[in-house]
Image 1 (cartoon, helix red, strand yellow):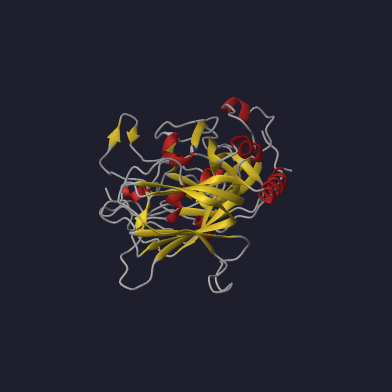
Image 2: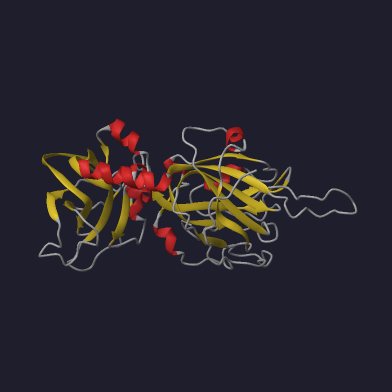
Length: 394
């Protein structure tokens, strides 16, 4: 079927605000394109990486009920599918997490109590600061929850569901109980300003949710990076991020710092075909000031559309690096170099490149799948990263 959108007992210690979200019921499915009347919006926080991506190692630890549809569907990459003719032994097969209908305590009180709700526990793929959450109810039109709420916790290691629900974990409210709309992307801005490892997604009183996206900044434990010594200083899982890019036509530039090698062409970064004399580029923020000693530029799965050449530059400081002298403050450390299709290119630098940001320029267009910058944090970089970690964790 059609698939339209793309990626998109506790004590409260904070009360962040939530952005207005879609409310009300969607119309019943009337045939044709199931996404024709889907409702969404341009949520600013979606520029941040999805901390709940399976590619990062996220998982749904447990759910109290998944009678109609499995909890694991919440984190599936891509938009939810809908087949109006697909039924199973328990009823309509839905691509999401769906619980049974709650009932009251007796014939005299058949309705769920106000406090009744279902929940799912999510382990983030990388701990970090949550900036926004999308609760997507695609195809759940009359069976979506009346409202949702989300809480976050910081628990190091690999806690079990029982440990997370033991009452010894402090849960912070990220999204207050808020009505949501069916067949819509319901977005919530989060301003908690803390580092979290796990979320609790609650639906009140019951119903179905197709997808959950948790956008934010990865914040790894400084002790882990120190133990690694040399690591990929731009990798998403280590705290690197994409700040900007010239083109996002076919696929997002964030793919280039995902874990593992690309498995398909769509798992990399590919730009539209240029018809001018310019070139495409991505600007990255490293986890902190770093010393880069080796580079990998991988064009895996890009065969007739790989970039022809690439160059790398480094700089330090805030801002976009534009207008700061003739070269915008950038120092080239890998000159324009020929790339081959479907190939991992490795370069050992004669002199380490030091900075907080890296820019890759590809010529003239095309794409690549992964960029790896192997090195280590400088002394100032280590101090800044450790201070930020302490600020977020208290």
